[in-house]
Length: 391
Length: 91
Image (cartoon, rainbow over all chains, first blue to last red; front, side):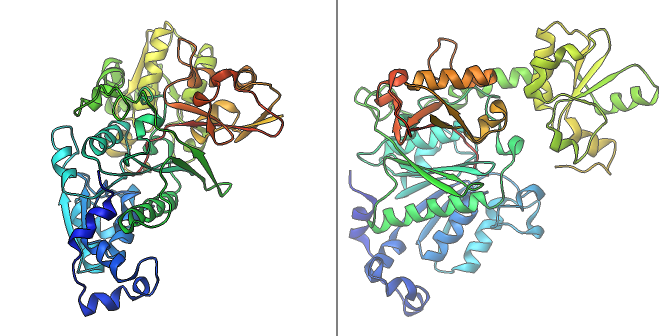
């Protein structure tokens, strides 16, 4: 299997005078030069996700002169995206991310061919979408899609430029090259749902996707140019809080089920099932007794006996609160004895997800009169009190 | 002493600390000392069968202990241990 740079050799396009002027700072450096710029123009790079990582990635790859940029996303721009997703601006709130992204990218560089795939990447469409690209860049936000992207890249022989972020910490690597390890060599299995918080639950420093996304863009460009030392077999750890970059060695796992010597995964599988998304988490959310925000309001107004329990973190309570007793989810096992199981308990959090886990836990611990506030504070703000800030 | 780096997602279970110093001769001892001090970490690091979880890697300096001697990997003065769980955020 040839490297992306070698494959591009056979189809180097000419540059117009306008393009030569536009890319002059590349053309005058020997590591890129005219031929390197032609390689960039010939290159087809696919960005999975047009959000936090996808924003800096797409902007820099487009500006650098990558000829064809594919974008896969199905989301709509939301107010909470604007703190970090620099492809999108305030007037774009409510628009599909791909419409917003394509508009910005085409305005920035009219020589760029933007191809949009407004869909969720699935086992059914992944190979067809990825097949036409030379390099794949993973800017997704969930384990199921990350394993899907990895396996599709291994099966198709495309390098997978990986980046991932949480709060102020990031990881980056290049997976699925001919001799290098893949994502499954690093992590054979995902964590069970609920054990690792997502960005929506855990937060992310706005600059961090910029830092990590630009590292991914750099690696994608190096793969296209065939220059430098790609981040193959190395995991770069970025800690923005201490501003330390550390590097760990990655090995190709001979027992890897998708790229090892005795492969058991030879086609795409059901990744939602593999990541347990369909099982545990959905059941916890659906299976616990709930109370609607309207019902809670009515019961509070009529003065019925009711104990509200807030399972968020203390810093979230500073943003807004329903006045419940604060027991962060992580402390619940230790502090459950503080709750009176003979009284009606209503547990809440921001969205209703953490509180559903808390209710499931309390019921297992013998609490019978405990219910989850469906939709959490967000539902309260939407349907009861519009002055309540949403976050 | 060995410095154990605790990743962001696990810091709430380690008293909020980014690094913990332990005295240990092997990787297994170091993780044992760490989880003895912070019992909440145990379920995040170990599966029910007692093995390290498949989404948590441990590195002595820059080498994955899976490819060294796992829990029996010896530690020398000045070595560091990094706990690196998978994270998926990107949006």
